[in-house]
Amino acid sequence: MSFIHILLLIILFYLPFIFLKFGLRKKITHPPTLFCAIFSFVLSMAYIAHITLGFYEISYESYAIYGLGNLSFIAGGMITDALNRRNIKNSTQLVINKQEITLLKILIFTLLLYFPIAYSEFKHATPDMPLALKILRIRERGLEEQVYSTITNNMIILSSCLVMYMTFIFSIKKINVYYYSLTFVLFCAYNFMTGTRAAIILISIACIFIYLLNTNKNNKTSKLFLLSVGMTAIILGALVAIFMGKDGMERDESLLANLNKVVDNYFSYTVQGVILFDNYVIGREKITPNWDILSGSAEVINKITSSNIFKTDSKFSEFSHFAKDKDGNVCTIYFAIYPLYGLVGVILFFLLYGTVCTILYNHGPGIVSVLVGYINATLCLNIFNEQVFINIIFTIKFICFLLLIRCFERIK
Image 1 (tube, rainbow, N blue to C red):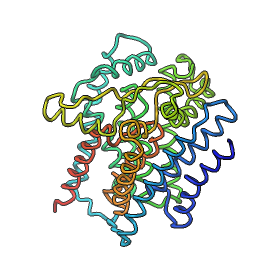
Image 2: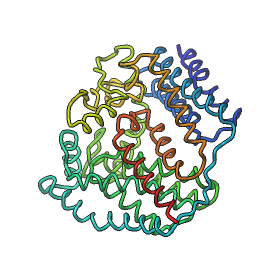
Image 3: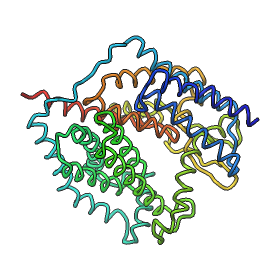
Image 4: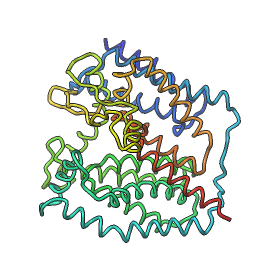
């Protein structure tokens, strides 16, 4: 059985990755190459966890589903490249005019000046209690209701959009490190108040990709940037996990004291999604499918029409076990497609998604790369969930933000 699992990994993932990376010489930032690399790595780690730690084994059926999605995504990218051999390149030497720089500085200082108000809402969101418990209570409330005012929620979204665009501006040396650092600190502060680490990790990964897409990743400055952003995301994510007491972490202990449990938590989160989806596929444990790749669009229509034309389920699936003594509720992007649309849905979705992602990627460095960086970050986290479509309200707001910035670029 072990031989067959390894063979499936090689045929469905390793060989396509080798072909893309070394045959077609695609960079790791190329969406199909990245998607293939991520699932190759995670499925390999899940297999190692099975033979060394006793995590549940992934069935052949799930390998086939993952493989079909992977090959379809790659096919979409290759078709796009074949039809458009002439790479469309936006020059990184954009004319960043004074109006745009002024707008960005105004947005930065708006976030800075509003933060005391947001912090006041954070302070009064729960009764007086230790910070760790406050973060936990806010997280619990956030699952059931809106914790902060609409203005504060939009400021949180603005901080995420702004830090991604500022990464692009910083990468082409159009703004100094002090403004960028202030923007990144504000982004972390606003999102830390939500009691969830998902946004901090997602947007930080997006910033890394945006930087890689627009600069030389081999120089010392690039390495320092990547290390700084990456470590910040990991540390803040670990602190939130400690505050929430995940995997037996002690809230009153330091990060160093919880280090072993933090490492275990990150590893478990990395591999559990591909195993938990397998639980659904083979019926190891009963999991009610409640994710839908189109639920975000349905939510938008409901908001626009001020009605409930479409029923939208909870974005949180049931907990099930990925090992005898470990459980979780993240089931990969496939859980949002396969239960409702079957294998045909998986093939068609990933074929189309691979096409769209590659079209955007082929625009090269420039403002479009900011969107590509975000999409690449979501591809990395598809091992847990899906963000672009299920959370389409944020995606739409982010695109509108980029279009607004684009308008300022055109001002003479």
